[in-house]
Amino acid sequence: MLEIFCLLWPSWRKGNKMHRGKRFRDVEFQQSQVGSSSAQSMRSQQPQQHESESQHEFQSQQHPGQEVMDDLHIQDEQVRVRLTRGSSRARDVWQLREDEKMVVECNELGQPIKRAGSLLSSFLGSVARRGQLCPLNYHKWNDMLPSYKVELLKFVQKKFVLPPESHDWVLKSLNRKWKEYKSKLKADWKREGMTEEEVARVCPPDVYHHQWRELVHYWFSERGQTYSDIGRAARAS
Image (cartoon, rainbow, N blue to C red; front, side, top):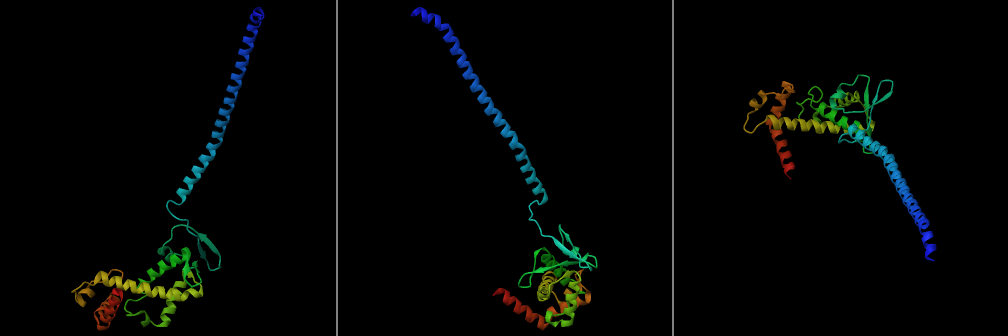
């Protein structure tokens, strides 16, 4: 029996070593496959991740800290409409060609909306500060003749395509901005203790002299003082 075991031992040992070597190679091959799959998966994910980061960077450069603005619709005399995008201000409206107008949309209340509505509001503010369009020597908005307000509306329509339901809003907005401008002039140029002549002598650079003198005279008049007191009391309440 011992002799048989001695004869079989070398071959069994050799076979066992070969079997263990095979198992080791199988494990090594499986690990290599797993590593290769992981590396391939990582390589396949890297372009997608890079593409996503590049897209985010591109979007950030497009609108750094800003929301996407809606397009402006510019209409010419042939009723052809072109779209424009980018920063626009009231001065850009003044510089429109004579045959071009901005198209304005309104909500159900007749109030201009979207980007064109915002530009219209800014434009009306600049109109209210121009003495040849909204003279300062009228004491009250209601003192202006209705025909004058019609002409004022026609002037705005030279720059904007306005829905009919917005006309009332436009005139009310002009009224409010005109009053605010006059109040700002009074706050900036009329100081406590100054006489009418002292205030009238220094005319703001963007105001007509004759309109300034009449406006200052109104401030110092009894009617002007009364309305000023009423307004002050209303703001305090």
